[in-house]
Length: 368
Image (cartoon, rainbow, N blue to C red; front, side, top):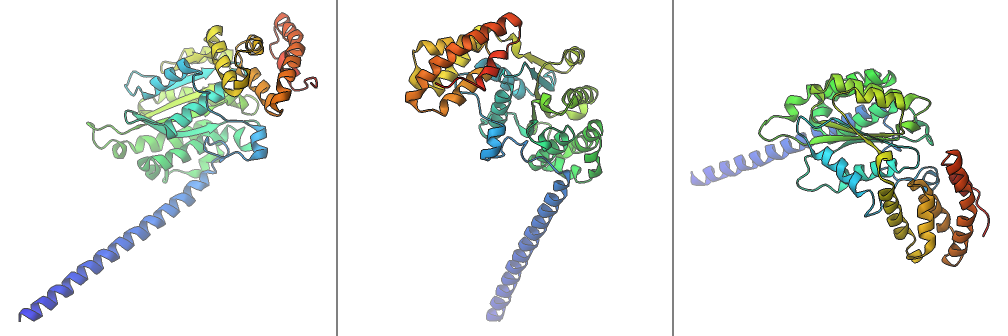
C-alpha cells in the first residue's frame, strides 16, 4: 500500500510539473504573440526612424545632418536649468519648456544632450525618463513633415509605457493621416488619459513622468513648425489636467508672433538663447575649441576666433570641421589665412547687421 501511495504521489508531482511547464509555455507564447501583434500594430503609425536620437547616421546621412552632445564644461547653466525643470514633477511646474534662438546658437546640440541624458545617463533620483523624441531636419522628407512628429513620439512612448500602449492599441490609426490637432487628441491625449488608472495604481508611489523632446521645428516645411508648436501649446494649455505626467521640451528659431502668443499661455517656460550673456557664450565656445583643437592651446588664434564667432557655435563648429580635414602641419597656416580672410568679412557683417556673411565665407575659403 505504501508503495502504491508513493507511485501516485510521484505521478501527481509529475502532473503538476507538466501543467506548470505547459502553462509557462502558453504564457510565453501568448506574450510573444501579443508583443508581435503590438509591434505590427504600432508600425502602422509609420514612425520616423531617422528622427530618433538613437538612430545611427551612416556616412552619407552624417554629412547631411550632424548630431552630437555638448562638449563637457559648455552650456552648463542652460543644461542645469532644463534638467531642473524636467525633474520638477510638482503640479506648479510648467508642462512646456520652449528653447529658442537664432540659427547656429546651439539649440540642437542642447536638445540632443537632453535626450541622451534622460535616455542613458539617468540617476536614481530622477523622477522622469525620456518618453519620446523627434529631431526635425529639412535634409530628409520624413523629418521635415509636421504630420510625422506626433505619430513618432507616441510610438516611442508606447514602447516605454505599457499602460499607454494598452490604450493606444484601441486608437484609430487612420488619424496618422489627419492634421496635428486630430493626432494630438486621438493618439496622445485620449489614450494617455485613459491609461491614468493603470499608470497610477498607488497614489503613495507615483509612477515616473515622461519627457518628450522635439527639436528644430523651424526645419519643418514652410510654416509647419510654427503651426505645430502653436497647436501643441494650445492643446496642452486646454488639456493640462489630462496630460499630467508628460513634459515637453521644444526648440526652434524665434517667431515674434509665436513668442507673443506663447507668453499669453499659463503653463510654459521660455528660454531665449539670445539672453545668454556674450561672455558666457564665448566662454563655452572657447572651451569647445580647446577640446576640439587642443594643440592650439594658448595660441592667439583661438582668442581671435572666439571674438569672431559673435557667440554663435555654428561658426566655431564649421571652423573645426574644416581644420579636421587637414593634417596638423597644415592647420596653423590655414588657421592664420582663414582668420585674415574672415576679418574683413566679419567687419562687413557687423556693419550691415547681417551676421552670416562671415559664415558664408567659410564654405569657400581661400586655399592655404
